[in-house]
Every structure is written in structure tokens, then in C-alpha cells.
Length: 158
Image (cartoon, rainbow, N blue to C red; front, side, top):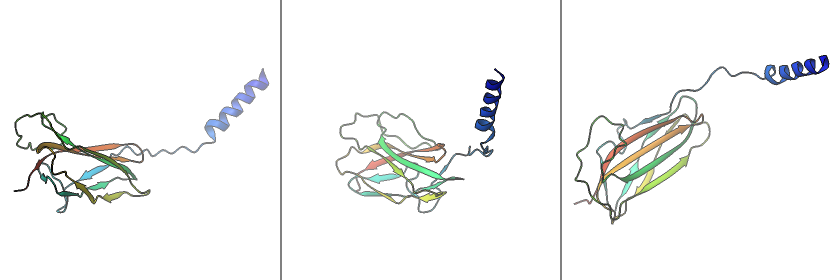
């Protein structure tokens, strides 16, 4: 019995005492920055049917970025995802016939703490015009995620 107890104690010391403990834990969320002059879109911005929207957003993390995603979907029923203080003027509720939907995730190269998107999204000419949401999510390599929800409009250019 004494041999089993000594063996168990020795095994425990090797298992738990032999590992180097990393005291620093990354608990800081990544950030989404649309404050630059060239950033697009902003809350209440307009995208045009049949044209390409150039998406420029700055993503940052204190340690390392992981991935980001873009989600554009109709807001014809005026549900809310917005993270902005200023509300946009909404059109009347309507039923979607041919709504535009864009959902795409993007991995980022290893080691980056900052990344600026330069993404071209083609808006179909025959998509339903109206109120839409533009959501961007960024996840760092630790799994922390930030979300920015914007209200935008898709319209026909005159």
C-alpha cells in the first residue's frame, strides 16, 4: 500500500508540477473600427443595386486575430442587431420577394494584430431594395468575438 501511495504522489507531481503555468490570459476582445475616412459602410449608409460595394473595415486585437465574417440580410420586419446609438430612418415593413443575402467567413493569416478588409461585394440588380443589416464579426485566436451591427439601405441609383 505504501508503494502505491508513493507511486501516486510521484505521478501527480510529474503531471501537475512539471507543467509551466502561463499566468497571462488574453481576455481582451478584438475591435472593429469604422472611424477611418476610407471605412465603408457606416451606419445608415447606402449600397446600390447592380453595383459593387467596397468594404473597408479595420480589425484589431491585442494578441492575434483569427477570422472575420460579414452578414448582410434584409431588415424588412425591422428586427434589431444594431450596435450603433443613432437610429436610421426605416421604410414601412414589407414582405421579401427577392432579398439580398450575403454571409461569408474569412480566415486571417497567422500572427496579425491588425487587418484592413478590402472586400468587393456585388449587389445584384434584381434584389429587393430597402432596409438591410450589415453585420461584421471578428474573432481572435483565443476565441473572443466582437460584433458591429449597422443599418444600411439597398437602393436603385437614379
